[in-house]
Length: 246
Image (cartoon, rainbow, N blue to C red; front, side, top):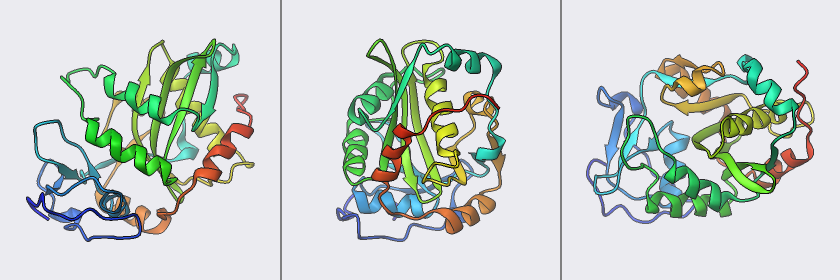
């Protein structure tokens, strides 16, 4: 699957084999071309690979080395974010407005970046994965106005984070902390083992994310990633209170 724009559209129960991530170039590019159909996307994530490109450029498939991940037990919550959550300024929901979250993520400014990698084609594809029960969102509201959130894909015990946005200070951080605390709660049906943040950012590093070798990441994926819809489990997070006491 080098430069192959003719790759057929694959349904969710269809799979392809990508080149092994060990064949990636020095930047982490594994393959070029193809499409963003559900079966292709699910095949990629199952193999530790994700799409990242810009409009007007070829579709690129990545598996960087090292990989940037967060283990739930290593979550660090900055003191200021604890205060923000305790003061009750924001309310949080799960899978209440996926379409709006991904749209706002696509328009969020990124330091050092021009344009967005969340293209119209990407939004269409991930909205389809949401309908299929794989892609999910967290929403943060102030006075019923959506001011922050995040989205990603849940596969078994692995959450692949894709993007966040904030229209007010700390809103995306509040979304992430609520998700992590509820997902790690004894009442949670998720039993998360790993957050895949893909590439290093200071934003996630502040929460305790770290770089691990790609081989170690692929071993974790083979153990904990299960490509089954999890819409019901995700929505149950709405019923779990956030415990910020520890």
